[in-house]
Image 1 (cartoon, rainbow, N blue to C red):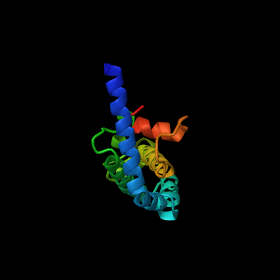
Image 2: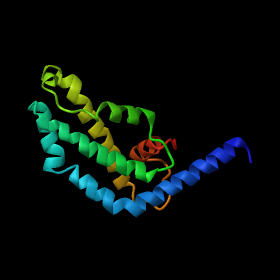
Image 3: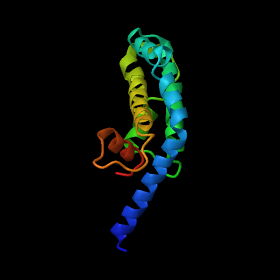
Amino acid sequence: MSDFGAREGHREAAEIALLGRLRERGSSLADLLAKCSDHWGYEDPVYRFYHQSFKVYEIQRQTESIVAALVELGPDRPLNEWFADIVRLGTGKQFAAEHNARWLEVTRPMLEAFFHARFFLEMAVRYSKLESPPRPLPSGYAALLYLYGLR
């Protein structure tokens, strides 16, 4: 088998393993998505951003919970570099009064990280019932493959 064939076979096996983990964890992923989509998990944090409330900092916990669930889906695969960068820039912050003068600069990355993480969680839930890789690839599924370096 050529190097390309071996790599392609490994990628297909990794994708099938990912689909299996999606099916296994579909219910808990759906619960997490519901929590990140309700009033307190979605509406309120976005409102807090526009209200310039320190309570927006709580969104970082949700982002971290989602990322932990996503890591569990692909424990042997590093998450996409861009995604990891977005999450790094949007987490690990504690409120300081001087942040008010730089509100957008400090807090907007928190929402960006949450929105990206929530998107991937939503795609994981959407495609958690697949038995095999879909062809042609729906855009959300293809994005999920990018998250795990499978596309």
